[in-house]
Image (cartoon, rainbow, N blue to C red; front, side):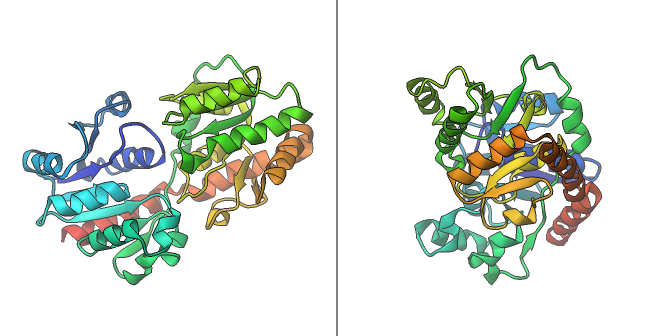
Length: 345
C-alpha cells in the first residue's frame, strides 16, 4: 500500500509554490498517494484538470487541519510555506511534517517576531527543504545542518511547451507573470515600462497574475495613460501562450527563493531580465539574462534586447540551454524520495 502524503498550502490560487506542489504530486504519483489541501478558490479548477485530489478548507486553521488529518489519515504532511509549516506543526504531534520553503524574505535573516515563531515551529519539523542554498546560508536554518536540505525546483519543459501552443492572438515585447503583491513589485515593473515607452512608444506589454494590488496597478496604468501599451489580464490558468508570444520576460521581485516562473520563461527560450537578489546567479547568468541593480539598468537591458537581433538570439539560445541544465527530473525525484524515505522510516 502506498504511503499517503498531504500537501498543505495557505493560498488558494496558482503561483510558484503551488506549481511545485502539483509537480511533486504528479512526479511521485507512482510511489505515493497524495492530496492537495488548501482553502477553496482558483486552484480548484487547476487541480481538477490535473486529476489531483483537492481537500478543501474554508481557511487554513489548526482546527481545520486536525479535522482533515483525522479524515484523510496521512502518513506524512508536506507544508509548502511558512504559514502552513507553523500551523501544521501545531495541528499534529504524531505525524511527521516536512517544511518546504520557496521564498527568501528579509525577515528570515534577522531576529524578529516572524522568524522566532518559524524557528519554534522548525524545532518540531522532521525535515526542512529549501529551494536555494542561499536561504539556508543567510538565515537561522543553518542551525539545522542535518535536517535542512537544499533541493532545486524543476519545471517540466515538455509540458510547458505543449501548454504554450494553445491559441494566443497577440504578440508582446515584455511579459510580467506573478502575484500583484508588494513582494513581486508590480508597480516598479509598470514604472520601468513607462520609461521604456518614452523611447519605444509602441511597446507592447502583458501582465498576468492576480492579487491585492491588481486594481492599484490598473489605476496607475490609466493615470499614466499607459493602457495602450500595458494590458493587464489578471489570473490565467495557463499563462504560457502569452509568455511564448512575448519577446522578453521581466521580473521585479523584492525577494525570491527559486522563482518557478523564471525557469518557465527559460524553458520557452525567453531572455530574462531580473533584479540582483541573493542567489539569483545560481539560476541565471549572462548567457541567458541581464541581472540589474537599478531601474536604469532594467530600461537599458530591455532596449538592448528589443533592438539587437544578435544579442536577443544569443540570450534566447542560452535560455533554453539553461532550462535544460536546471530541470533534471530524475535527480529531483530521487532527492525528494530520499527525504520522504528518511522521514517515513
